[in-house]
Length: 286
Image 1 (cartoon, one colour):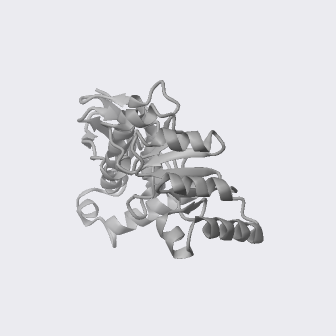
Image 2: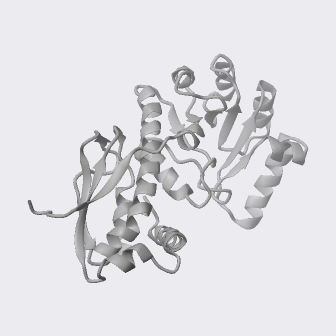
Image 3: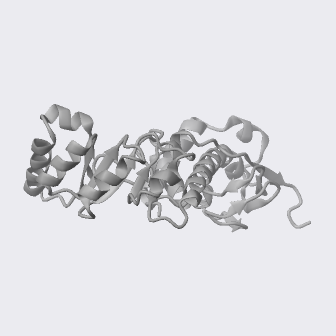
């Protein structure tokens, strides 16, 4: 779930970027005491995401907001349906409109694409992971959209898990010194972080198994035909993750190998925003 202090900080920063020294279109045309109603209209099929964020944006601007949801995050949505009705100060509705839509359209696109991947994996042990290939300062919401779509969040950033990838290993002089250095560092700092190590070949897998002390092995750019040999070596001792070149067309082939996770950056960076609109309701009770 979303961390509320972080969400509030995001909303504050995003509104400041958009409003600046004032929403002069609204200030010039609408009395500050006016209240109104608007509805979120769905214009494209998909998976809905961002309802919690939308409500938080309206309430940030107007504590007296009345937010009436008609759907919830993760619901399938169809063009022509409505997601919510909101009653608040008209200034709030107009100032919040673009931020609400930007968040919900982007999040719904990510949730929809993630759901397409997770649907392919029904009946398999394998689960879909996201990556750090995210939009700067929007990661929290993009990863929340992955979760809403049925995927699993990988590490949030560089601070909550150790991942030794090719550049770490090469700069350090190899897998064994890299892992040993990390274990010593974590012990010295008292950090209870999990360790994942990238393997680029079966020889790398053997070296990781020899040094041990890790939690997950990433099989980078292994084809579905190459993964079973790696899994046989690992033999359930560590979690396994396949990464690189995984698409909707081949994700089921990876799942058939029995690998624990597949990481797919595309569920975020290839997602297309869905079409939503916020429309004023002039006679809400009719």
